[in-house]
Image 1 (cartoon, helix red, strand yellow):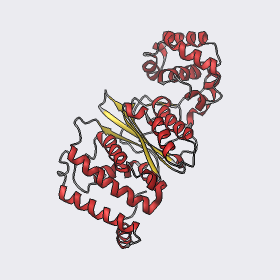
Image 2: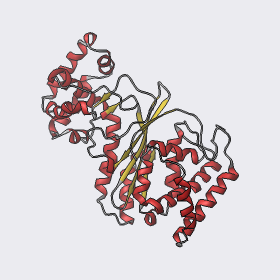
Image 3: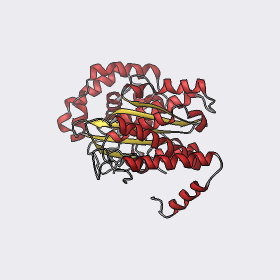
Image 4: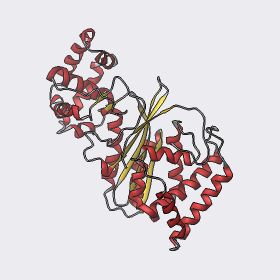
Length: 364
């Protein structure tokens, strides 16, 4: 399975309580069965695949193309695993809005009550870095508002996070998988799944931006006053710059960015990842440093957007048909019984499910 990106339209409204309760029950049965079949790492691989995640949301009865699918499915999964984390060796942290910022605290709490084969600091760092990259290093116009971090007792992890573009009324979902992310600084998304491509994207994690990433730490060693002066000069010449530079320079305030320049100058980052992890270095700071690196030092930047479903029980908004509660409850019972029998060593239904799965070729 691959990590990737999915684009979804913003939808208003909330998931009805009765549907969310059934989503939790069905999600619990699906995840327990999947964990028995493929292990906790297998669950992470599935969740990191945008196609499988979208299909899971449809199976659970949510809108197939709604931005709320991400937040609601992640919430249902988190609730479904509550109290069973130790048994499955699978943990889910984070969520929408302020809950997402509490992810490191949740990781440490799990570490206090469960045996983990990895230091919680490493997991907390991975969580923060994934959010920092999709918010600051990949500036595609979508501001993150949801961050869910899933991990196993062995230290494998997956991230599902979503950003919002209020002007376009669209959301973009980002998927990460630790085993597929060999270098978080370069092409961390192994596959991209999206119908929408943005025109003006500052992509610091693109392969083409490698020289810029290597140059950025050198730029931060310049005196903050010099960086402020260069940025002011760039804004003065904005009329002669490409359109993308005009867009990005227009909302940069050189004087206010002096604090960021001073912080990076004092801490002297050794590489791009270290620069990302400096507190206070966000979207505008990275943008300013990148434009200075390109226009003063000549290092090229990438402006390439990395982005380029099925039903089982109906959808919340009645598309393609209303949720069939009777059918959904039946699915919950069947899967729950399969899980219980599997735990008792009665694998007949698991074998039947495997035979059923073989009838359908797996998507690439």
